[in-house]
Length: 212
Image (cartoon, rainbow, N blue to C red; front, top):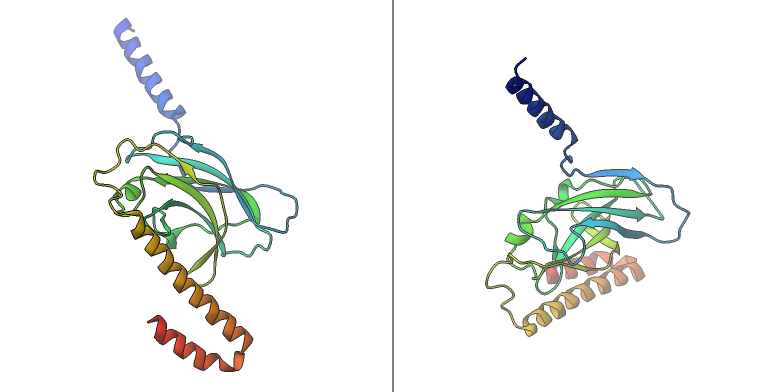
């Protein structure tokens, strides 16, 4: 065999070897991890790439390993989301929450893959980007309740969109107060129907009319 042919074959072999050893694309996965009994729920960030304080770009996919523990576990009830704060109150989580995998174990860890393009395109996300991971409990078909969260992590955002965060602080304060007002009314309604169950039909009718 000629030397040139041998070199070509070696090059092809190295190329295929490189493909075989290449880092696989990020995919969601969950594995069970034994944990002592606990009276509470928790979610803990094990590691994240890029690390906190690193630079994020629009074309990136953040990879995170998160450990969780659920005291009163029920199947098809709990899930984990990453949240990026938005103007006023709340946050955005990339992807379709309806397709978010439900946790299969009472304790374990999950790998989350977080594409940033949808976050960058959101008109109200706050810059520079920050994020946290939240353990949520599904309360019905359309709503869920946050029961545990990791501390917020901050990152650099060198390619943040122009004309960002143009509203004054008073705008965000007003949104926060409005949200608190509606939450308070909802809590009072639930307390009333629990305390006076016989009045629930009339209270519900009045509350739904006000809510609408």
